[in-house]
Length: 364
Ligand code: 13P
Ligand code: SF4
Image (tube, rainbow, N blue to C red; front, side):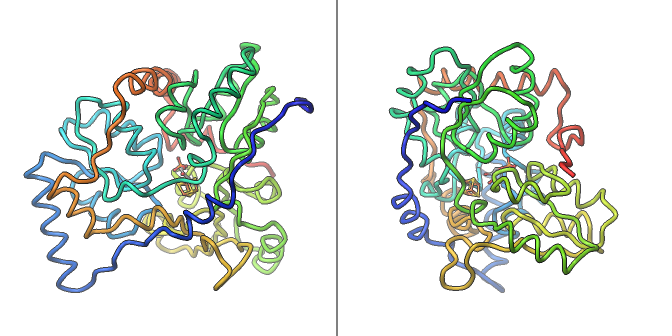
């Protein structure tokens, strides 16, 4: 399938350089932290703002989002929550594509982020001009892009999907007899292609965090912990996915941690997720799946360097000053809204919840 296709080349060196340059948020503790938290609570009220945080952000942000009537979730639920909440300002703690998705869906609202420099390697791997030319070269294919992309790439797509719903959408298109151009995550795309049997042409991007999980190390760890279940995010390499008991989006993995009887879980995704896993399954233990390098050679060490840029101090600053506002060109936003809304309407029609067990796949 697709053996003669010329695929774009990913500038891995630039992406790795940007990841290495990402500055983690300034840590705060003790009385200073308490003061910042009260200040943020007050600012959220004053500015009519709601905090929406991804599971990979610092646990202080997750606790604050939950405690102030906001939401902590995966990308699908983040988009839905921000869209349905009445607040006039959405504060998105996550990476830029998440803020852009919120703005696309809510052009009339103000969308703020603690930092505008929080990238995503998948987004960086898919420049809109190159992507657009690639689409032009394959006019017979329905264009499905992962939410981890820029507003311009979303605007060029027929569908936007998140990992919670990607399999269901591709299955639907495959049943209609459509051939698919998928971007940018080659691992998620490869996994969906395997599960659905759809004809999918895959953009060669990948997530620098999940790419580092290694199959050999995982097999050895599994052997030494026969009581453990393995939970894998589908942005991981196929050899890692193949060893999973459950493959799913972040919400689906959290749900599996609560539902499965195992006392121990080996988790192949960003370790920021452990906060929610421990909350829903307090008697269970969670350990990181082995990565390529450890210590000094480890690029991400199971934690997204861009998610780590979100902190209490820059969140308070953004609320206080209005800096960190996400702006999307209105015409690009209008076009991107069509493909994002298509996903939300599809989810609504199928009654797919981000927590829907039906979307969890056990490859074993
Ligand atoms: P989820 O939608 O599963 O939360 O994934 C988003 C992401 O960026 C994972 O790396
Ligand atoms: Fe992007 Fe990977 Fe970070 Fe998720 S973990 S935001 S896919 S770089």
